[in-house]
Image (cartoon, rainbow, N blue to C red):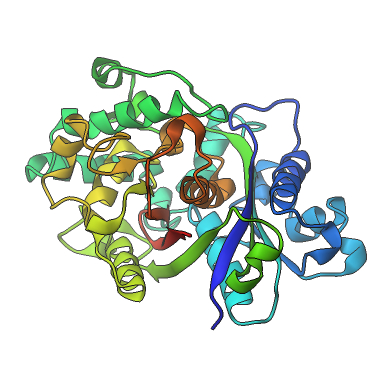
Length: 389
């Protein structure tokens, strides 16, 4: 297997982008990444696109062909593949592209992720999200996606793993960094009381505990590490990309619903491959589609012991300059969560950190960065570790 590098990144603004179509967003992110990599379009060998549900959000299936067509790649007849894994669609697309390059099948591969969610009403959007859990035994019985996360939060509070305030503090941390990101949907810091007093969604979670509905796209360009210097001196090494799965339904997890076992397994495999421990990671993007997911991620990834993550966030240990910088992009909560784009945007943020190109969000002297992307109720998880060169 060949070593792989990221040589280009491209991210659109995230938010309610009424004046931009799905295809326009995808093309914008891809063209930015290709330009950043100093590549010409005729050098691209393959494309992978993370997308959760264009068929329901914009009534467009076969988006792999759509993106290939409107980026001019269809005339070259390169393979284009759409990847779906719920909220982990972007992360899984990145892993498939990594395997393509590492195996020697392709040299230059674009990984994109895109979602156009705001064209539907809230009820329809939530119906799509609910379907990423078990549609028959959970959503079909009236348990919403937010409700499932609320059950986890309730259990964490009951077991003393985190207080309500500690769970809410994750949103404060994400917004603190999101205020520094020009592409973030919400570029404003918030106070803990704002989260705690926000309108109820599913007890104990409120509006400010939940990632927003977003439009947006992100892309990165991969190539063999040995070829990276032919195009740029600014690249990051892909040290590990792992994936794991778990039961689709939350009730299938047994008594412990406060751990995403897929994240734990994917993280352990990644650390083992690189030969490092969680203590060696200086910056991480974690999947905070709900604040409780963010707290769990810090524990599942080994950054903090179970029961200590919430306190660490409240104490400022997860801000730039703290023990470990978490969600410097603003995370799903503040940067936004166009689902298919999320996993790719996470990797792009870590790549920019490793390349010392994160501007006001830059973590000084970062050697290793990590991105964790999950789908459903932690049913799928990818963990990517990048290394600064």
